[in-house]
Image (cartoon, rainbow over all chains, first blue to last red; front, side):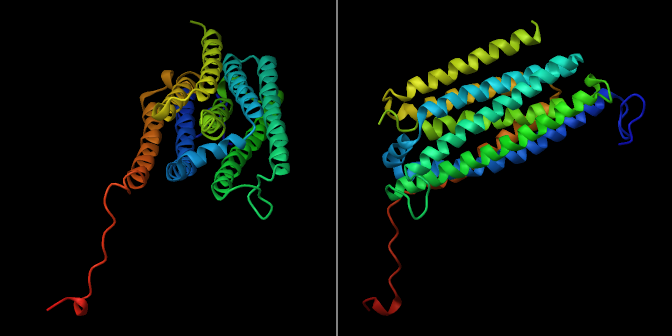
Length: 211
Length: 104
């Protein structure tokens, strides 16, 4: 990195312009991510329309208490992430470190609960494959369930790794915190993963509860 | 208003909306069920994007890029669903009768 003393990299005139470019670049990446997840969501919508009430009933075989708890956990983690970014802008290192590690812990809690749920699903024969116990429509539903929650969980694993890297960066503190854009950008990524779950939860867990 | 106050309120609103969507799911609302679920999810998304992701306070170009991302998602959904949802609207077409089978 060719940082000058002011902490501004080569093509930029001032920190504000640099931040602007970093935020914009992150949004372009998130736009690509949105279309990536969007493809899965639109296939799910089409399959749900074609199979109607059978598809909705299949969703009742998911474990709602775990899904609902995980929703609360992830929303809380988004809040602590927002506070972490806020502390970075304010230049408060200790608070930043605390919130980064708290957010990572909440992400890990989500994955632990999701793992418990996967084990439960596996024992109930819900993993599509030779030992699947259920109808064809249920098999289709759980294919969507495992692919979509699986990709989401992978994004969370990456997010937790990023948070731990951020904690290391904050700990070393080579440059003044408000000058650094990584906190803001990783925050954008974390909130995006939260938004994906905001849609996954009602679509996968709540679809057929009234049927 | 202090930023931390805004974050606190957004967080409480998100939890309330999550509870609302769970409660509403157990009520049979017929055709309104899916739109209401999506409406609540969209409201939560808007809160996250505007406040947690700071888009409300971002520059015009960042807002434009965020908006365009969702516009393309809307195109993806609209074009795919325009196929899936309208397949039953027309009667199945009958295959053309070969020339040799036609009566003179």
